[in-house]
Length: 307
Ligand SMILES: [Mn+2]
Image (cartoon, rainbow, N blue to C red; front, side):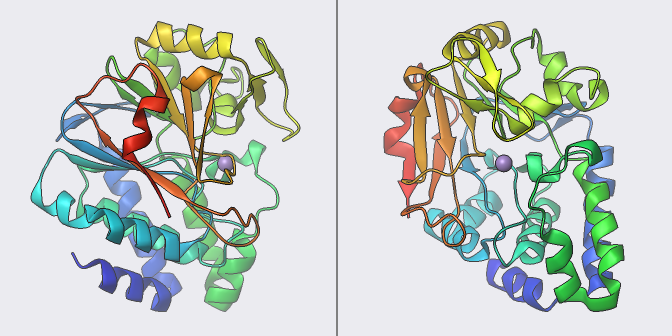
């Protein structure tokens, strides 16, 4: 697998091959059950063995250059090829806003196909269910400009893919990773694993994809996003406790420095893209040693890389 050829391919790909690639990933995700390499899959929850290293990448929103830079700077595609306990985790929000949405989707899907047991694709709110569409959602326009009259096939196939993406990653006794945030009534790992099945009766999926930590909120309050909630430190402590983990790693919010802490360091936010329309000064990603136990995300500073 050569990263530079995938990137080159992603810029030249036709609608039919784009659709074929998505189909291959849907088949792959549909068949993932139980133990597969270092991953254990139950419904839409991935549990990771606490060994080796994970590269964690936050929101990309159509920023292909940052994705390429992160993979090159970290040397992680070589690590994936060399060692089975290297895991690449994306926190969701691959498309919309940036101009290279199709290319970003294509690249992450090719990485999943190249290293099926080592790549985890989480679901972001921009990959949400039909009744919770993010706005503005310019992916359809980008696909139209890109694939002309064949754009509808590409768009309906990628919407089909969204329903197969994972809700959360759990590293036992260590950390939880989701795109957005926590739901106050989550009691068990099954609530995470089955959130897409209990939606919309329960608000678990909505909160995992949409919610934001807030330091001024005690429990929960309404979110200006129109979906999800603001959740307070009490919710973070309660839910992490119930899941038997110490810290939460998530994306979803623009960070001026590429990352930020909330809830006295119990929550780390990563934002891994730059440029329009956010214009944050830095993007950031995390290279996490999975065996180490961290009580607080501020202890992760040596493993957070800014660019
Ligand atoms: Mn988001």
